[in-house]
Length: 299
Image 1 (cartoon, helix red, strand yellow):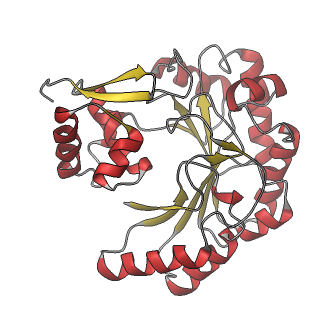
Image 2 (image 1 turned 90 degrees about the horizontal axis):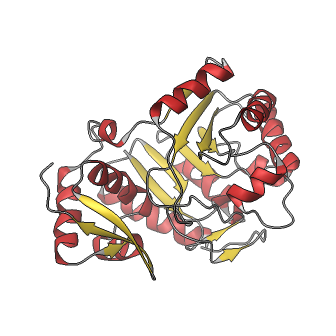
């Protein structure tokens, strides 16, 4: 059970990934500043933890790149000082780890989960559509440097997109980069929800297993499928019911559901994936974005 902490507004990022479930990037930037003041974050967090059970993790995440917030180090240090018994995780695209300041700021975290979708410049640009001043080799070297400096766990996520990074050449380059970085765990993922670009395909389970066999690494796992997620203790049937009742009234986008249900985007995505896999809702691309529509079928 993770409590998400947003440090940047929707959708401030260094990438404009074609598969992003939160939609297109509205501010593509490398500028680090306090997009959301650290004092405001800490004040809201204090109020939440005072009135609610402690979560298993506090997770820097959201619809954007959290390391763009120049106050992330101060927030993280304050959390570890005030709530030392709650582990902290950081979900990041890893694009700013070439900056020694960013690496140092994240050292107190218990778990860092960077992503790496490509190890060739051409595919990096096709999938992640990075800010023009980002260099892929510098990003990979930054992650390798962080591994040497950091004593916590690193779980590297690789998003597999058929037709983009699933051929032998790209997979061989990815394996080389993985060995260079040296993460504790590699998590293979694929498209679960509609992305920012239409007609992207998800890799099937057999393709992901074939990649694991080809790499021959003993620390690679496949991210849990929606059906598996529903079995976890963090899955709440009341939240599932609230989403279904909302969509019965009218189709909604992800931002619509966030506003209506007052739930973090990352949390909502867990339920949307389960409900879509069960055939209870469907995603439809419209002019304003991806809408989720109630299908009325039983679970």
